[in-house]
Amino acid sequence: MPLSPSVLKALIATPAISPMAKSTPKLTKTALGWAAHDSSGKLTPFIFKRRENGVDDVTIKILYCGMCRTDVHFAKNDWGNTAYPIVPGYEITGIVIKVGSNVSNFKIGGRVGVGYVAASCLDCELCKSFQENYCDHMRPVYNSIHWDGSPTYGGYSTMLVADHRYVVHIPESLPMDRAAPLMGAGLTVYTAMKHSNLFESQGKHMAVIGLGGVGHMAIKFGKAFGHHVTVISTSPSKEKDAKEKLGADGFILSTDLKQMQRNRRSLDFVIDTVSAKHSLGPYLELLKVNGIISIVGEPAQPIEVPATPLIYGKKVIRGSIIGSVKEIQEMIYFCGEHNILCDIEVVSTDKINEAFDRLAKNDVKFRFVLNVAGHQSSKL
Ligand code: NAP
Image 1: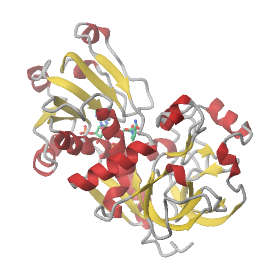
Image 2 (image 1 turned 180 degrees about the horizontal axis):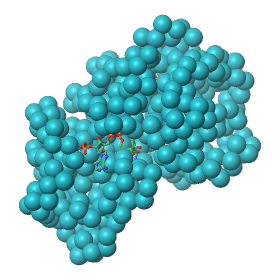
Image 3 (image 1 turned 90 degrees about the vertical axis):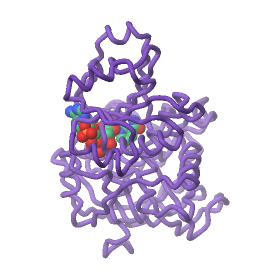
């Protein structure tokens, strides 16, 4: 999810022009984080300051943070726009420990979550229509500059000060560790599917390309929405889990041309979560006429799109980035009602680099979640 270097530079130069500028800009609160300092992506303990809790803010003691492939992309500067030091992490759950005087919807002790968006202009058409994740002035929760001029640092840390307009409630029924990746992986597929009308309709044939952190949630939402769900994967070893553990109806090994051929023109909708360079050509062949492919994976290199399978089937390619705060809350309540949770492996902070390496090697079932609360210095 890159901000270009020029945008970052402009952000740094932007005067505090939004309502959020009223938040206290003083950097007084000490936090412990895990930061990458160069493109090796190696994470080391990092003490830094966060802003004082402003009138619109809540301070959150972070319990858990999901480890998304996005964090690896940023830590290793895959997109060429990383501003070091970087504290990754945007799938955050925790407990409110302080509330500002303007905040009435959160209380101390409340169970909350924070996703990718830390701030937006609150004034444009997109912000006013609950699409602030597409606001031109959207500020991510890390690798960005907050309205007060301070760098944003993410959830691989003990504490976060967040504007309450970008915070959601987590119901008691959802465990905080397994709920953390809902803030990113869950939200990403939920909104991509919703905006392609998979929420209202039922019985569609859909597929997910890539059975990783984001991909495994597409099976869960796909089944909850009432669809026939197929996994398209490069890893034969994932078939058993896909079908028996996660509930997929079908499995296509994308490296097996016969299997791909057999499934030609069989799908109404495909969600592409692949994090590496690839061509859409073989996947476009799997779509029916008028079928939709929604891109959510973000490889560093451009995705190849051959014209022939696209135009000979009136096929649609669209993209989607995370979701709005309203959609996060809606999704979280939906998960509470339907008992939808992420399949995770909890990682202690001393194993953070091991988890990062395994994530880069496609060795995780299906999301690592950093146990920040378990860190001995988490009182910081
Ligand atoms: P992940 O856990 O590493 O999963 C990615 C999956 O892609 C892998 O498990 C693998 O699945 C498949 N894959 C990897 N290399 C491949 C290749 N060369 N060809 C085909 N498939 C390949 O990563 P993630 O956390 O799910 O994130 C996936 C991507 O989505 C990342 O680029 C991330 O930055 C992006 N993302 C976007 C949004 C958004 O809002 N748009 C939100 C979150 C993440 P198989 O083994 O099954 O093939």
